[in-house]
Image: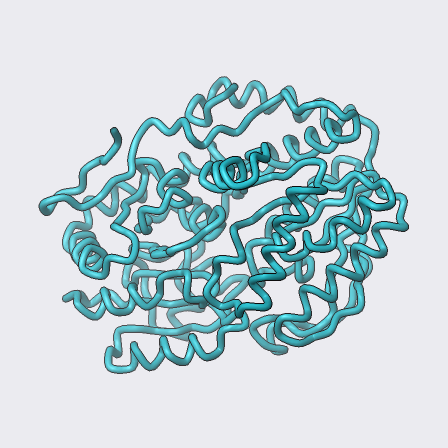
Length: 432
């Protein structure tokens, strides 16, 4: 077993697996559960695109089953053009009931039905809700893999019916999936303790980006480099944004707070958040961002913050670190285990602790600079999409061979340092 901190050993193993990935016979792979590819509507869409494109490039036949309908943040963010291929990946668009709570259910049902009668070698379900239809292709003897991107039934935005349906998807994955992939040690422990079901830990990855100058963000929002604290993600209750706004309003700083992202079936919450921030003109809401605007926001932030109560494995945190940001997150394991001692944490849901930590970072630019200098190399070496794609294909082949995957085990429990937290006016590691 290879601990992720042992980078040199890990790179040698990665090179070996990459060679095997190209040497193996091509597979026919289906991906479903995402809204659409390409898209940045959520983390699932990013993961599916990164995996699918790499697998197609290496010679596998990959089909992504997209849903119909508008972009989750509004029609202005999507071109509504139905594409049939993207970077070597086949795109199949399935019928969708474009209503809140029904779009994911209907699209995954139609996608699962098509896959059940297909010639795909592997059908890869993404997220708990879509897994409610995993039994259908299994009924016809298909090999199915499920990735649990997070415990979605716990998310505050879902009502009773939706939460029950998502929970049914979780149970269906446990019962029928040939293998279950999880993104964090915490979720792996959850499945073992609740269902006595073994899972495979394969985390998300990240690409090394190109740093951008502050051009568009200066023009649109008056932002300069290091002039703002950034949150970038979906505007949903479990991201801890109420705590963030309340904490930030208690600070004394000229650095602005930029909240970038669109609602995700959470328009009422977004309106409530704006109302909470209305009496502080330092707080800027940008709406959904992508492309150059998103890249500039990541490139020029003073601090990136993710105060979540609940995560699977936050892609936005990986991306923020890849841009060389000092990152401040809640101390939930899904964030703290990613950063180790290369970022700063506060006690989850603790507005006072968050406010004090923001104030400390604003008053100590030399501390922020230290974390900025270490972040990019650390995260890009630790979580590579090439590695993740290799390990996922390795798992597919193990499923098809009815054997266990033995090449690499991503072990996020063997962290050696961190997390770092503000203690008596100083940042200290809380590692045991």
